[in-house]
Length: 140
Ligand SMILES: [Zn+2]
Image: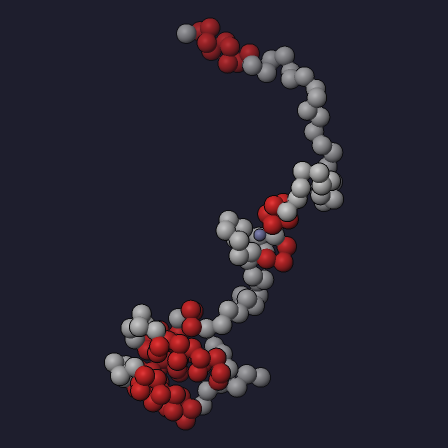
C-alpha cells in the first residue's frame, strides 16, 4: 500500500515550495499537491514538487503534475517501455526487432523465426509480365 502525502505534510511542503518560488501562492501549491497525491508516494510527491519549483519554465504550481517531474513508470499503462533508439518506437525495448536486425552481420544465418519457405526468385518472370506497359506505348 502506497503512503500518500498527508494534509500536514502537504502544508509543510507547500511552505517550502513557496519559499523557493515566491511567485507561487501556498493555496495553489496545496491544490496541486492534492491533485497529485494519488500519483506517487511521499518521496515522489516531494521530488516532483521541488523539481517543479526549481524549474524556471514551470510557471504555476499546476506544473507539479507535469510528467517531466515524475519518475518514469513504464507500468502505468500496463505496457512495457518502448525501444529508446530513434525510429524504433514501434518496438518494445526488451524485444526490438530493429535492434536485432541492426546487429546482424551479412554472414549471420537467417532468423529462426522464419517459418515460410523463401520465394523462388530464380524462376523466370511470366511471359505476360510487361505486356501491359508495352501495349500502352503502342497505343499512343
Ligand atoms: Zn531498437
